[in-house]
Amino acid sequence: MDNQQKYQGFRSIRNRILFFSILVTLVPSFGMGWFWFDMTHKATTEKVKQKLVDSANIAEHEINLWFKERNYDLRVFANSFVVLDNLSQYRMAVKSNVPKQEKKSLSNLRIISTYLTLIKNQFTDYRRLLVLDNDGKIIAASDTADQNRPVILPDNWKSQVEKAHFFTGDAYFIEEDLSPLILIGAPLVLANDSTQLGFFVMEVRLQGILPLLKDSLSIAVRGMSSETIILLKKDGRYILSTASPENHKETATASVRVLDLFNDPLHIQEFIDDRNVHVVGLASSFGNLPWGLVITENYDNVFAGLLQARNQIILITFFLTIIIGGSAIIVTRQILGPLKDLTSGVLRVAGGDLDVSVPIHRSDELGIVAGIFNEMVGRLKEDQTALELLATTDSLTGLANRKQIMADLAINLESFQRYSTEFSILMVDIDHFKTVNDSYGHLAGDAVLIQLARIFRENLRSLDSAGRFGGEEFLVILGKTDIHKALQTAERIRQAVDEHVFTCEDVSLHITISVGVTRVTSEDSNGVSLIDRADKALYEAKAAGRNRINLASDNSPDSSPVSQDGLE
Image (cartoon, rainbow, N blue to C red):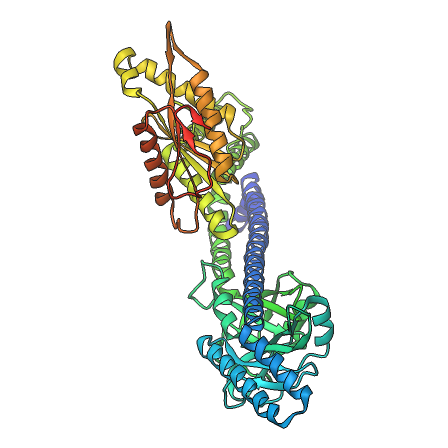
């Protein structure tokens, strides 16, 4: 009887619904879990790829800058009067074939060698400085233990010189130095008759590139040895590596798995590196150097959290399946539909998407919840818009507030320091503004500020910024503008204010402004010095009678003079 009851219980509708509910819950849960894991894995991989690509671009840029500095040093040294004059005298003495001149020629070479030694002692990046004849043989060298070690020039050094007036060799190693070395040379030419006397060659230590490679690593992992940059020759031999900065040997060669990365540049792959560490990485080749970069990051550091979350999701899904299956009998299809819409909407809101509207299918409790949810999302969107506007905008004038205009100034200053993008600033103050407030009230003062802000918008470009610095004082940033154009813009604004009739109800006012003008200089490490100069120029304009433009005294002396009515 008991067995029959159990059999009948199993065949009952309730048990079948329970079984089906558990099955329906279990399959989608694991399916969505797998889908989430796959999507998150792809997103994480793409994020890591972008980080590694950014590091590769920064590293290549820094290395190119490093070579430009070395080429600049090379040309400075090669154009030295000491080298050219003594080398010219040496060649003349050799050609004369006179015994007395032979002694003098040796003296000329000693002078050149002494000069090369002095330079080498001042620059630790240079192992040897050499002067070669037109056939590539050493005729003078800086003082080192291996100063007479033969120079192995690249096969195409002459074609490089013909094309670019200098040549660069490939990296190589010697027993006497832990750092990889490279040859950089340029022809020695007399300026008056273009006679080529020989070549000036620098043997440069590439160890100086290593700090640049380390600095190009992502900030999030710097100092944790998670991200590694390897500099390789085309044949796969190591040049430099941030993972082992003190161990560079010419015989160390990358594995085939690492070299395979160059078959698909900038494509992230998962593999075991030469240190037997599970990593993800990609390769990048230089455009103008016979080298390649390999950038890797520890796989466990990248995906450990994701794998742990996957295991937790599996465990949580299992217990939720039991709970949901037990209560699934009382859940109907009419409830699941609205709940799904609400869940989708909540997830989108949690992901930052506020353009969500949940459809209201019913007028019962779920319909009320859906309606309230839509109202809440609408209010959240309105509040977010208001907060963003409040955080960056002056509520009265509609211009940038002090925090935002200072942020814009910092951005322009960073652009100048990095890319030499010139800009200027104006410090603008309303003349006798206190008198306006005292005589006509604060409403009239507010009207003046609002109308002045409108004048700024009408006279400034899209790349310029204007913000209320405080009270009746405004800061204007003129992007990509030298001091002469800045003065013209300041005069245009001053005239517009001078000619404008400011109104507030039935009151008409004539308002003038005083303007302090300055431009960014290489000595400006932050915006404070810029603002101080502009502020000082502004108060000098006020002291000189107001309604005028005054250029900061430490700007270029060829700037146009200013008068009481503006620029002359």
